[in-house]
Image 1 (cartoon, rainbow, N blue to C red):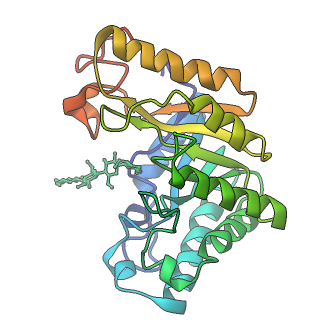
Image 2: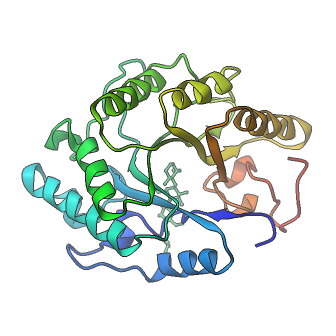
Length: 261
Ligand code: G3I
């Protein structure tokens, strides 16, 4: 409440949380977060409407046109339920493969047809015309990486063809194997030049002390330098609550005290 003006549910809006049985929607946990945020004038980032991971069992076992319809129904129902309350939605999460291929990630959703992503965006726009609609991914921070270029090409194509997309989320999980890249600002500004906002959506930087603080400063300065960089979300508050707790990657220690970062 003291430090943030936007909030994101880490797990509570995912498909397995909001539609545990097909066409039976449960919003209780997500609602608590949304109501807490809106009651204090905070924005909400919605995460996430369509993803290959954290699907409920019923969806994992579907394919083809039945899965496509179920996915679009999920997007429509959840985005409609939260219409007017969400600043930005991660409509589609992590749809590209890692490595040098630049290809889409194989998944049950991808196998419904290459147009599944744009179909999800069109459904989200129809359901909540006021929300900014984002494509969100990781390992898309380094401008030279094939995955970054592949996402860039998709967004450019969407803008050219009028597919409704407003923003690109860079998760930005940094560690020694995937460090903050010196060309990060180029990545942010290049996406922005396509006519979309960029948002840093899941920031965490493993490390400690001065070097961690420097990396956080670099990321924030890069965002501040790009007019269309419109938000920085850290993926947790205390180190002990992080999905990578052993890397102490967040801004507050396990006691809730501020770190140098
Ligand atoms: O809540 C249950 C608990 O009841 C149970 O006892 C326990 C036993 O495993 O599991 C708990 O659920 C876990 C949940 O986090 C809450 O802690 C799940 O197993 C675990 O899989 C889940 O992990 C989440 C992960 O996404 C799943 O893919 C992480 O918290 C969450 O930080 C992480 O977030 C993702 C973003 O959505 C997308 N980008 C990458 C990021 C990191 O993987």
